[in-house]
Image (cartoon, rainbow, N blue to C red):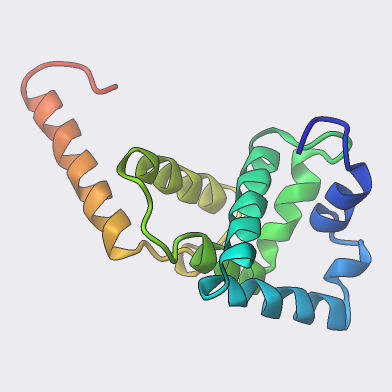
Length: 144
């Protein structure tokens, strides 16, 4: 979403006091998110939501500051469902490290590691990257 556009939608999505995060609305929203594993449109929207969440965690979104957005990370069920859906389909190789990095950022900002399990695909990529970095260190180069 473009900067300063759709402010009310962003508020509803990322402010813990918006009606979306209260009672039945929250339960229904999370149930809808879960369907993203089988419904392509919901999956696409969940990926967009994940990307927007990451943008917000890294620096805020329009009038919502980073702290407001990171408060959502205390909702472990939401975090786990969004992560599960976002990683439920194969991820292009060149994008895998961005998911691994996003996971690290989420954990640093309060999301429990147990809510963000690495898929086999991401485990393999993380291991490959660690081996590459170790080989670079062993060769006396810098890791970049």
